[in-house]
Image 1 (cartoon, rainbow, N blue to C red):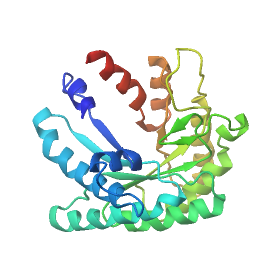
Image 2 (tube, rainbow, N blue to C red):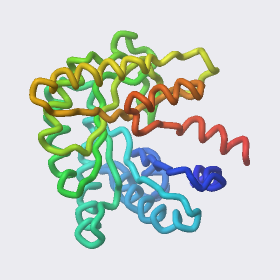
Image 3 (cartoon, one colour):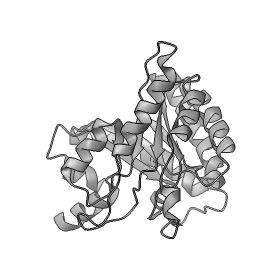
Length: 259
């Protein structure tokens, strides 16, 4: 909620509030066991209801999103979708605005098939689903990819097309976390250079595949545009279709400075 406090000074900001499994368990409290994801499930649901209740007081639109769900945490995502469906039935919108599946370390066919299965369920609520193809460097929620080979940090256009062509038949409400040399963490400006121009190439490749059918396409990207990136680098990435930018580490630093 510290992010809301800092960003409430700019009323034009739309905040995407990421709830990771570890964050959800922490929100539930140390007295709640998490061997069977009890803390992760109850904490995420409690945090979502709390944020929905308090956000109007800050006068900021908030998008609720659960982030980074690898294969071992898919049962956690299953439990998130149930309250989503109940909230949708009562209020016409899911409890969470979107979810993220992080299966980039799994077999690509399994990644796409599993994402498609969850997207089919989310589509009924017009809920967004973020999927990851290729690895994001750095460390997030206890998952350390700092030693990953550099080539694994870049997604190929053919991978994007394979994902897009499979998911678009189910729902238009999905985004792709593609690798373009981006990493988690805080770095000095210039130390990390994400190649966001690759996202333009992916867009062009996908449009080319669809051109023969007279259809138009546009891929939406979810991106860790690296802390330390310049304003111009952010704008370039957004111009190539980045719809969600992770600013968590930068915001944590800003909150620390404010307090």
